[in-house]
Length: 271
Ligand SMILES: [Zn+2]
Ligand SMILES: [Zn+2]
Image 1 (cartoon, rainbow, N blue to C red):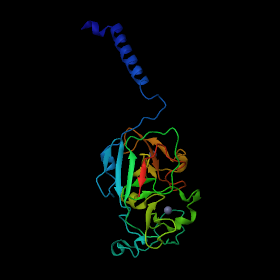
Image 2 (image 1 turned 90 degrees about the vertical axis):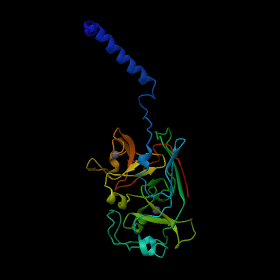
Image 3 (image 1 turned 135 degrees about the horizontal axis):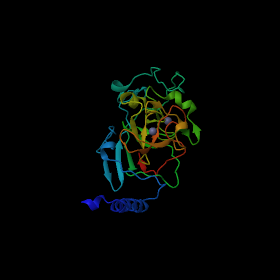
């Protein structure tokens, strides 16, 4: 018994612990690489606007949605959902770029078949792919996130007045086709329906690279693009990831959801 308290034995024990830890660290991914994180199924299940069970297979999560918002919108006008879900624009959109004079576009909500295949263990990509036009991620109500452009390298500017009360609008179903009857509803900026129902710092969805998107507040503070990196994210702890994770934020200033591309490697989406 007395020997165990001998300072020399104690030192040997400490040395073993110290060298044991440091050698196992060196077998890891290197000190500068952000570790990948595996996102549990129950976090994905916060995406409620789905048309089938969310599943994880061979490193990807599969999320299927129909692209029909669960909130009202002027863009349900004269559709099959008109009686239940049409509401005129009521000038309540708090987006500071929305002039208040609503400029409804000719497209309407339509029912789609959107399949997201997203990496389940996202990690930083060595080359960061730019986002494409069309869906760049999925929000909790199944509506796609779009990037900060109205067309290739065209800022949203004038399109913003066509956003409804909840900051979304539909794009044409196909370029040059079927205007006035159908379209792809989406959010380029904060989905006000989701942040009003949850909170300004809540999980809002995922981009195609698998990293989560949060609302415009964190720790009681409003996040702006100047708090984030060029991809429009940072690493910090969140409610769902108390050990920390890289994540994007929606912000009231450009580029709103994503900046110069995906932080990780994007999965795929089909419509
Ligand atoms: Zn748009
Ligand atoms: Zn954050």
